[in-house]
Image 1 (cartoon, one colour):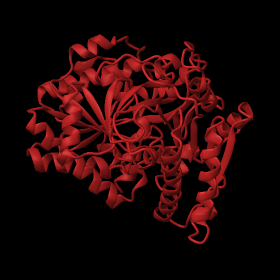
Image 2: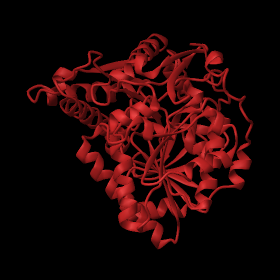
Image 3: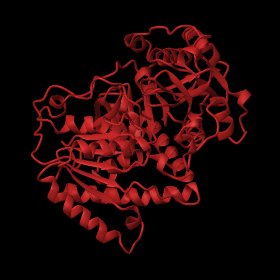
Length: 487
């Protein structure tokens, strides 16, 4: 189906300026629990935490921004681990907010292709909010759309959009995910399936485009009918739709409706009235710091098709860059793991003195019989990647670090680079691919790029590497022209 055909029965898009959203912001801070670090790709100049002690959260709140992120990496965890982590973070966040007399609005940020621990995470957050504040959540608003990246929702059906052609997300590789797969692109049916029928499709409220484009009053009116964590699924095709949803939710908040969000990456930007940030240029990235004489470190862990194509393009575009392969079969075997990692680290450290080094996992995906066992393999591989990065950083700090893949980029940030607190400085490509500035630890001063696994065109990784590898006085960004695809 073509986009124009799907939109024929709905009103035209309504323009909403970002300052109009800022005028109606609630007197509260959005705390975004990000189930992998790629959720920061649509925002700029906001704090991000990889640690969630009360002290860390107090620091983030004290920065005075309308939102901050906490990297949970829960998509890489089994269900019980994800539940425990969300519960701990919510309790600590509420404790920190109480100390500062600040109200919080919780956002569970997840994948725009519908993968992740749903409804587990929103259930746990709602329970914790009720336990700590005695205030029940009325509505759980699902907004997975990511218009910049070609993820749109129309009449509650979630699609991938490419060249005006709509493909139901259930017909893509993401729906066949070994751990988080799903059978339907219809968000009402998705909720029913994921709750194992506890919530029927007919019990899910729908914010369709006719309601959304009717204005904030209509949105708030529908939300006012929600009680007991009623799921509400929202359409969105444009940034303006996301801003209208935000205005409606802000109005509902003022009326006394407690809303919990489950969203894709761009919703927070819309909700706080932030303008899209232009892709960062080389001169901005290295402003005020030495760019270094060593090469950069590019770490690739994701196995989705677009990542493999990008990796191939990168190695063709940089034929003189060194490449090392982390063989998964060798990593998961205790007999070969140590020698294999030591050899990779040794060669990588030598190579960084002369230029960029690309380290990627072998491209044959190794899975197990169950989703939990497949996650266990992923964690072993990620632990090996982290060890390699940590040992390289100790021996020869690189000019920059790029981590490709959700689990990979999270674990590299937390364990490889020991980042606890950082600032999101902006995107490397239009609307996507986040650059963090570490505020502490051994990676302080080293630009760190969080690059989602299912991001972009075949050239996107190459474009980012070119920008980061250019002389620090460079003022142009070769990747500024094309919108990209992401999670």
